[in-house]
Length: 142
Length: 142
DNA sequence: TCATATTCAGAGTTCTTTATCCTAAATTAG
DNA sequence: CTAATTTAGGATAAAGAACTCTGAATATGA
Image 1 (tube, rainbow over the protein chains, first blue to last red):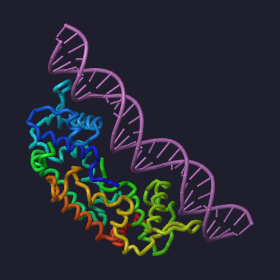
Image 2 (tube, protein in one colour; image 1 turned 60 degrees about the vertical axis):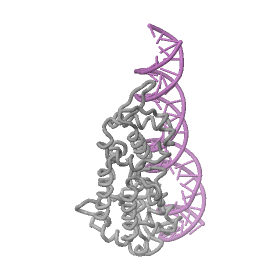
Image 3 (cartoon, protein in one colour; image 1 turned 90 degrees about the horizontal axis):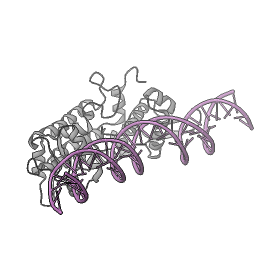
Image 4 (cartoon, chains in turn cyan, yellow, purple, brown; image 1 turned 90 degrees about the vertical axis):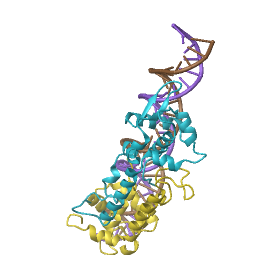
């Protein structure tokens, strides 16, 4: 099996979205995130740590500590998160894995994939986390 | 990093395409495939073995033995290969990994992704290996 | 102030995927 | 029938992804 994005990346997207539903600046603990989102506690900790390092989140230790978005949710796109966690490999490589495939020497689906790839890219760039969070909101989610 | 398809799947696609360039029925050894495609020999052996088990290839032991397509190249689509190796998970799951995401309760990119996903699917279904091989052919390739 | 509970930080472990190795079984050619 | 060649298939190793455990930092209340 192969997912489009890694599990880490999916968890990161879910966590960032959850944080976007909180009042701006409020700290949320790994514990709460892990419980509400159903993500393994320690694994999520590592992911959030990484997102802090990359500058998307801010963290604080100790009681009352936790994580928050490092900037307004409307300024973070889905692409920012994907880029930080998985990188942008999917925008570059031949979808079929042909090493020789390029614009000069395209594989049979080169052009078709270019269109779809751009579609995925603009899907990720055009949605910010505030929008995602707003549309995702439902009673059970928070 | 996360590729769309697994490396196994990419190797399988390349091998099947290579076989499609051979006269129908001719056997090709793992050795030749591995060398020409630059794929690890033993790993490729296992992949081809698996493709035989799945019915896409036929194999024969002994000198003059090797692998060949089990049916005409025009009857094998890219999707057949992907399905055999990676399965069809990408057609089902939420691209952002939200567990609650569904038609009833769509995530922010649910509809957009549905369109792109269908695009990928039809890209894979509409190209058969004969076409892929024909368009891929170039002096160095075989 | 200081003990303590709570939280993140980072090293460590497990599991899956990728890749390698080795022996057996089949088949062809001489 | 023997030797050479090729796939079959299990066992192992290395790399990377997923997950866990322990320790350092810090706020809070006695």
